Amino acid sequence: MRSKIRLASAVALAGTLMTALFSAQGADAAAEVMVPRLALPDASTSFISQPVVQALPSTIESESQVGDQYPAQFAESRQAPTLGALVAAQPDESELTPEMQCLAGAIYFEARGETLEGQLAVGQVIVNRTASGRFPESYCGVVYQPSQFSFVRGKSMPRVRAGSRAWREAVAVARIAHEGSWDSEVSDALYFHAARVSPRWRLTRLARVDNHVFYR
Image 1: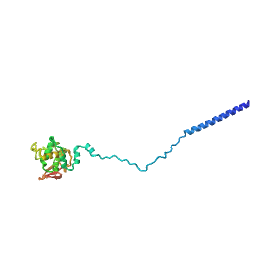
Image 2: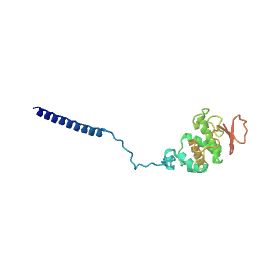
Image 3: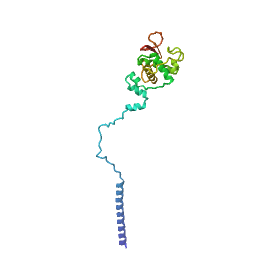
Image 4: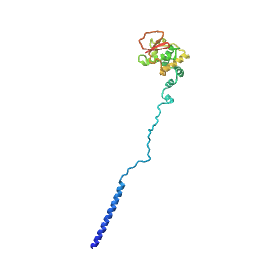
């Protein structure tokens, strides 16, 4: 009986040892799976030693783009090499508004026969007066203001020769002065008088252009 008990104990002990052994091996295997591994860098990776330069888009607009964004008169003034060329580029119009008739008429009667620069200077004074706050705010108001222009008789001016070259030039110069598409030599002038007289004005003299002296 004792021999059987000892044999059974030995078998049980052996089973216990075998179970412990297999359990330890399983734990080691699980531990091995759960250990994180560091990813090594790819040996094929390469580095660029020179900086990479990307070309910036050009900010300079083409002539066609500029022409689409700005009024036609500014495109003409950039393209015209001279005031004469700009005058020649002005469109022919059979009818003028009353305001433009007053401006062109003043240029015609005050500076007819002078250079285009001289005509533009006269027109510039009228345009400047309308924006100054010290004179009427319309071209006709400035031209017909009492005691300002010697060619005005009451509320009218003499007839013009509408088909003449002088009138066509006066109309073209009036449009240029109105649009501001060419810089006048006396761009900020408000007064002028004929060069043959000396009124002794206490004003800032700007320049003489043809037969007139201009002031501000």
